[in-house]
Length: 418
Picture 1 (cartoon, rainbow, N blue to C red):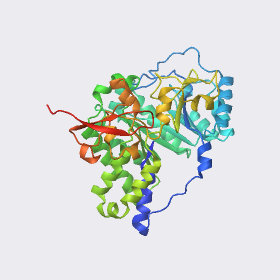
Picture 2: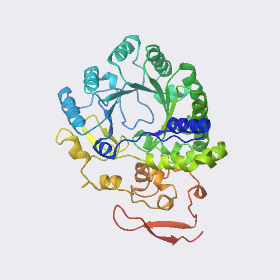
Picture 3: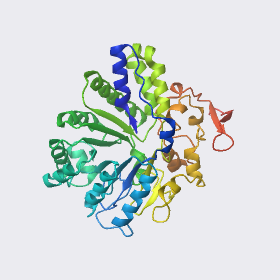
Picture 4: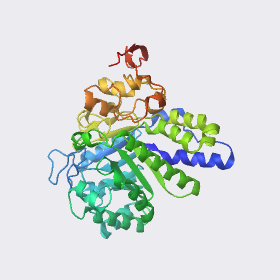
């Protein structure tokens, strides 16, 4: 996840004070003991069948899901592994009969606890229950305004139900945000969704780039083109910057495309050239510290059957089961070639990613897109929307990576022009 607002607030502070703030840093020893944020698909069942669902959920029960006690046992292991936060998801997690029992235990154990929901089941009594439990955050997915959202969600009235859920939660003082995945079919609704967020008083806007997994995999041919992505990012960065300058309590984040980090520098140079000239190196240093893609490192996924994955988009790659092994043992096991590669610093990549001058920021971007399109998790990310000249890549050259997981680019091979 790329927390745009964090960077914008630091820039706004620097603009006002003339000094770029030094953010507080965790001690190295403490950081090394910290486990990943875990996105937990507690249930696969969902009352909707959304076009881009990575879990390919439907409205029926799925066999073999973890029992309440198995979930509790896994939570004990997660706590022992230093996991700081749980994002409780689905399917639609509110369909799970023991959901609030699980959520209460998560809060009691000290996890930062979030709910990811489609929002259609959040009526006033449900909102009261969510508020009483004290969720730290609730994210509700919207794919556009009414016509677009209902088409994506394959349910007439889905938009009205979800928006009502947002309002019920907001009225009860719950931190609530909108989640939006952009494709070529709903990009036109992105600007009005930003306006809707402000009108409704939602705290956060999560902009997700389409990733090639689940139904998103078969939907990838309709992914937004790179220029549309750049236009959307410009709009999002402009909105986040204006909010930071005004001191608004709004948060903007993105996910599933770590090119957003380097793109922030290009936006800054174009939008605020004086700030870029003064503080560009400081911003870049912060971006490098952010580190880019964290699949298999700082973010993990547990599915409804208890299978651990590097993140939610790697459901086709199992690392192990929490029924059979402790989470920490699964997560630290690098005998799995994918995990060895994801945890390597730097990661071994090829193509544009190997040549990229911004590799230390994005970390090679999203590996699952490369794997889905080429069969090779370490080829260049086809979702990178940065231009060759922006990342120091010569169009007439292709990078070849030789060696093991920590290998660097050894040579450049000329590619014959057509």
